[in-house]
Image (cartoon, rainbow, N blue to C red; front, side, top):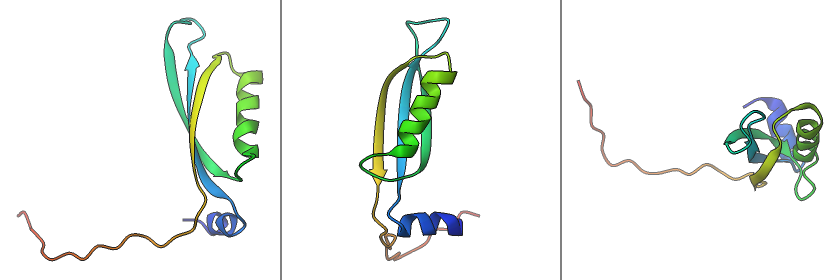
Length: 89
């Protein structure tokens, strides 16, 4: 993880992941997906909405829908005690 990422998280940014469903320009009946991820501020999501505005202005495939998730907490990783280990060759 880059130092910049840590600084963003400490400033309140969280990891936002968006799955964008869009229609193919030449085949309007076919949906494709695009996965977008960046650090953003909830609940306004300026980077996500900026990217979606860019998409609508510059790209040909019209957006059908967007599903997103946001993780805003800095928390310790999960640790698990390991009681054994198997080695294969």
